[in-house]
Length: 409
DNA sequence: TCTGGGGTCCTAGGACCC
DNA sequence: TCTGGGGTCCTAGGACCC
Image (tube, rainbow, N blue to C red; front, side, top):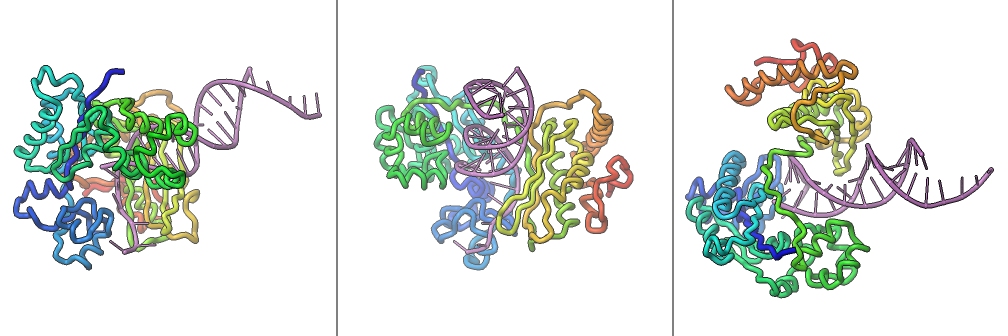
């Protein structure tokens, strides 16, 4: 295996960074993003200095830090800046993995001669272009593997650039505690620390066979990557393929009301199906779940007789299985649906149980609805089961009666 | 400081088969 | 009667990520 050179680039407080780029007056102010009933999703360094952390409830910020500016979050802008940032990286590298909205990996291997620059200079150029053109602060890491590049980009933040030269890995691993390693979370950190493994260096020193014996496969890859052996591929495919799509909603106060819970699930399903249609994906399985006040999940998986992304069909299944996850004595805070085993395109195969024909008809209708929404905006049309659930005892059972199930506004 | 929303991958263990 | 060993597929759920 040839030595690689991987770049990792990470937006600093990305959402807030974009807000400041859009409105420079915010610069230097304590700013957080987060929805009203939600939690802090991003925060400026000034907000962090006050003691705010990611995950803090917004109401707490309002109460304890009244001077902090709270922004609702503008995902369209974040996505736009994100792709502009990735485009800058692509000026230099072909293989770019868009890992998340504010992070990517790029394979720089072999680019020194053609670009007539060192790897560090390439990273410097990318950083400067992002800083100047997008007015965004980013931190970069360059190393021989993805996991080491992650270590490097975290090394100096914000607006840092760190290169881990081959052979110098130890200097970094000694000062990286296990819970900071990408892929090692709270559970595994506790497991490792109980065995005297405090740092990435300790972890590497344990040897691959120990890791194989004690932990699962992903940790073997992490061990190799920390040791400078590149085993994680850069996945440069565009992010339009999903293996699952999930929609959830938390409400307050928590409730046991089945009609309300069903209407929430109905809404979840409509949104999930809309996204699936957008990406031309069809699930083979779905699952529905309720989350209790104590954060316990009650889940039901349903294998579809015939794959479809028509919400009318899927909602009637939800209605049938609801009792399996709902208990009369438990209070729930969240509903959710997941479309699983997604396959691309419309699947036209065996017409088992006549569901296929029904699904095909719905597909045509949804095409029209999606067109309407593209033209006039979202939420023009939605299912009556979503809207009127509070008045209806049964939901989605008459799903081929369109006049009753679709509400046109 | 009681905790949102959206993803991926892996494993243990059961069912079933030869 | 009681006993192998091995393979595959599927599901539930855990752990982790941003």
